[in-house]
Image 1 (cartoon, rainbow, N blue to C red):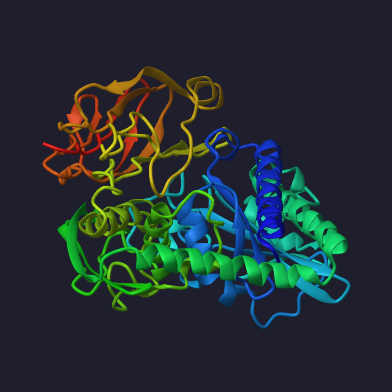
Image 2 (cartoon, rainbow, N blue to C red; image 1 turned 60 degrees about the vertical axis):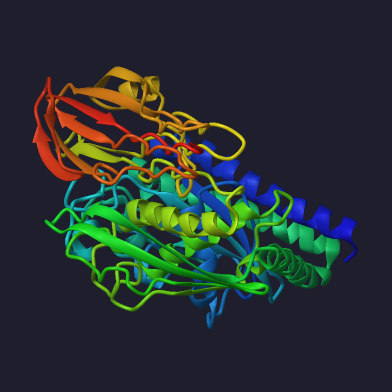
Length: 515
């Protein structure tokens, strides 16, 4: 393909991913998907190599790129099939992130896959919001091994009922009418829309589609190698710490030796803590997603997001460590909190390589809040909260935004109060939380919620003890704070609340840049 054809093709694929995202958002019922946009969409070739993605959530997309080939290999795919999976040890992230995969076939020929991944606020964990302070994978919800949700266009009704939480004797014939199943059906619709667009593209371009996928990834690899080659060779070390694991262990190190040699980069996490009792462990695919994201940020915007970008990047984390945990280690917070710290560590090393290109640390946490109540009027709510980003060589950090591994939005106050028994008393920037410097870090936010009914609440947060670091002499960002009825709470915490109780979450600010 000539450069013009390749550019047109890459943008066509990106457009398919954008359309998938629009279908998913407009079809879903939960605020977590339709308001916060906690989902991702991507296109893969027949061998499971990433070829295009929408500008969605890095931790979703990077982990899919790392593991998709193993998920789709060795299967007899048929038109109308839909696979569903959430197993973190088989290419997932944590159990609430459910992946739906649709094969794209023209006649008997497999061309590729249309894929969505979305966060479900109820995946059957032992606490509302399905983000518990857990010590075992089984406590975190339903584990879905790679299974056909649809086979040749026909729903697997028992599986659908299980995902919808319906009892075996429930009267509903199909769970598609069940509100809890609506988000799964929305994912299926988005995948089928993407598959239809790829089939139309294949019918237009014929057998050239597979060659176009290859050309796109080869181009991405060339661009990645050229960018890495422009970095100075050497070994660069950086370490940072997790606050705690929620089970009494604190000051948990993540250690990186980054080696740049020619056109390749290798990341060795030897020296990182072993897996812990709490749920901040993560599978290697999540650590890979964080590393890939950091290197993608070094590249120009016009570089296509594809598998080829990651070929020059090698990753190693010892098996049984925090970043390469063994089943059945708990992983609910690894996807959200540990991935954020891996970004800080990789960027900290890259700041020694390309200091003008790397910002100070952003808030370094997703400030996870999960809550809900059981019973006939039961509800589940989950949200990540924004904070400050780091200052950088050309300007100040951003205030009140989601950063790095989470690319979601907030839940609007109107949506929050209309869906749940909650009242928002304060929602504002946290003045003075950004680190000092020539370019200040961005400000965190402060949100105060009042409970209008009894509920269970779980917090999975970080940067409450270790503050976001500054660069080039810039100051640290403020640590985050959690308070219930004005009493300080630990970073990982679960409790019952009564009507009238008030929860305050104050998110960290970003680090400052320059003295």
